[in-house]
Each structure stands twice: as structure tokens, then as C-alpha cells.
Length: 252
Image (cartoon, rainbow, N blue to C red; front, side, top):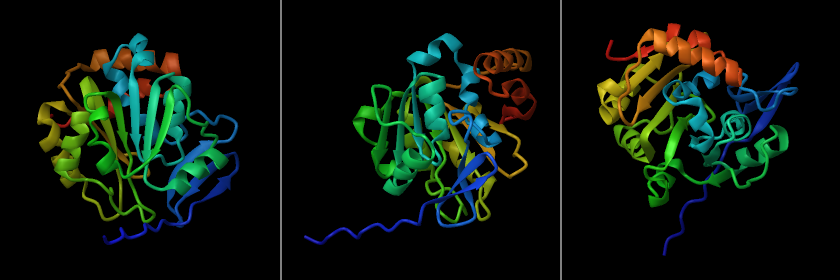
């Protein structure tokens, strides 16, 4: 029986810029960041926007929900969901060195009743029966060491993501890369979720565009989103009051 080829991974390292620590995969590209005096806070703007699914749920229900991250990065989303939101949280990461780095350098706690970090290929892991219709907030941020394009970006992959979600669940995706096409990626997400279920932020200054897709399309007018954003900001400290100004359905 032929042996499967051994995977090779880029070197995992970090750099410190004042009070902020950055994760790198053997290149200059930042794969995640942490403020040393606030390790459970969300430092980067696009990472904060990955929490936009909170606009579509009641705050009191959050603690009973399940969050899943595809791609651990510097574990910012994983720590925030587990510690700040007190959610059941599952992270899937291909590179075991990233998990080791997050636990050694980025204050990711060990697995416990609310936290599970799985070393696996996300494309394979999310097809397991145990995850189907079991995730309320799916956060997808899958880039390699070159940060050129999403590693998983097909319509079939996004359909698999949709199958993970509960009826009122949402997926948020970070789209960024020098070689990627935002329009093409967005079209694949729309193909998988339907045009009425997809929302998008304007790009950040760094070029990250966060797209949100709903298992079941939910509409909300600007006034409703503004009120929800204010509530999120008051409760969890995210800059959500300004999100409705830069966030809208893609069909508009």
C-alpha cells in the first residue's frame, strides 16, 4: 500500500511591534495579531468584522451557540468566542505548528469543556456527520504562507460550509490576496448560499473584505442594524456601531 506523502509546513514565527505581537508563516505577511495587555481582544479591524453574525442573533442566545473557525491564525477569534462570548468553540487548523505557537506565544488555553482545537484538513473535517447543522457561527480565514488567495474557495467548499450551519447560522469569510479575485470568490459564495443571503463589508484599509452568508436569508433595515450594532458595542466592546455604514446586502 503506497504511503501518503508527508506534508511540509512553513516555519511559524512571530514579531513584536510595541505591545502588539504578530504571527507569521515564514514570510512578512501577518497571519494574526494580539495585543499583549489584552490577549482576548480582537486587534485587527477585519477580525472584528468577522463577528458581524452577532447582528443577526439575540445577545442572550449567544452563550448557548457554537462557533467554529476554519484556520486558527493567531487564535484571536477562537479566544474571543470562548472567553468573551462564552460559547462552545471549535477551531480546525491544518498546521500543528500553528496550534503549538498559539498556545506558546498567543495565550490560547488548552482544550476544555468549551474549547476544542482539531488538527485536520478543513475541507475533509467539515464533511464529518457530527458537524452537520451544528454550527451557529462559522468563521473562515484560510490562507497559506504567501497569502496570495484563499486556500479553499470553490462553490463546493462553500456548499459544505452552508451544510454546517444551523437554521439561523451565519458564515463570515475573509477575502484578501494579491492574486485572488474578490468578484469570483463572491460569486461562488452567492452560488452556494443564494443572492438574498449574502452581505459584504467595504474593504478595510489593508484590503480585507469580510463577506457574511446566512443559512436562511434574513433581512434587516439600517435602523435595525444600527440599534443592534450599538447593543453589540455596549455589551462586548466591538466597534459595531459603525458597521451598518459599511455593510450591506450584495444584491443591492
